[in-house]
Length: 380
Image 1 (cartoon, rainbow, N blue to C red):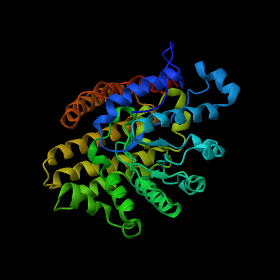
Image 2 (cartoon, rainbow, N blue to C red):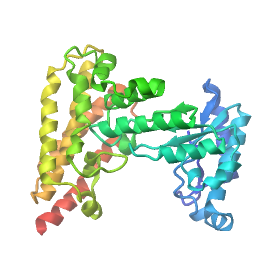
Image 3 (tube, rainbow, N blue to C red):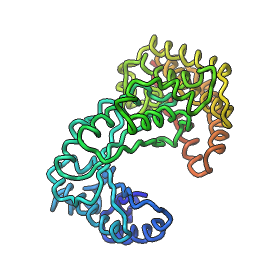
């Protein structure tokens, strides 16, 4: 539940106004009694539309950051009304650190960042110096990756823990998002969940543990040791490619590439590196049947793993077709339809149907840009 803003009559622009506060009051009165926690994350991030449409004149008059700050302060009054401690995403307020002194001290700032090199070492001291209680909030690095991002995942979690300890963070919130319709399956996040648990509980003693072994011991009970190693190594396949896009893997970026993005996306992507990725992905696929997990969802885990690898593989083959100027659209369309069909079956095993259409459509919507890219290069 997010304490952002209401939508105006255009259906596009969000409003930080009294109507929104009244709406939120109604939501809070309905939902909050269902939860025992006194902590309540009200959101208040992703304010890209602030300063446009309805709020444009107000932002020009008193400043965009002032408009932003006033709204969470009003939301905090609602949190107090319902006997909750307000938590909010702290990235926007850091854009104007002088406003930190105007925040009440009975709230918690959620300092998030999802890259291994996120500047927690610069941001945490600002919250610490202001006296605002804060959490560090890294992530599993799983979303829109299809393979995970092993090095970034562990680096991001360790970075957050180290600086959270150093600067007195009150907590460590591990996050797992579903950008693009949540195309990664639950087991792909296990590495990040395990790393977050280890580092938040005892960072120094767990900094160099064997995570592949930990995955086998805790999640898979695989006496062969293979399944944990497969997941761990899968998240390292992307390291063959020089390109390191933020907040998703190169495979996610390649799958979604549009004609106007091609030059930038393909900038550090080379055919030999993609061929090496294919080789590794195929090798990991061959290893899956050899794994012997003894958990209730063993076969489901294997099926999910196979389909996530298929997604990454599809993105690579598609890119190779473009780079080699070969029209492989019909066969790749058929492949994606098969991936989509399997995805829809797998989704319903762990999840409710809500969100499935968005997820499925997201996959198939990558076909049109692919067709345009092929036409562009083949005609040349």
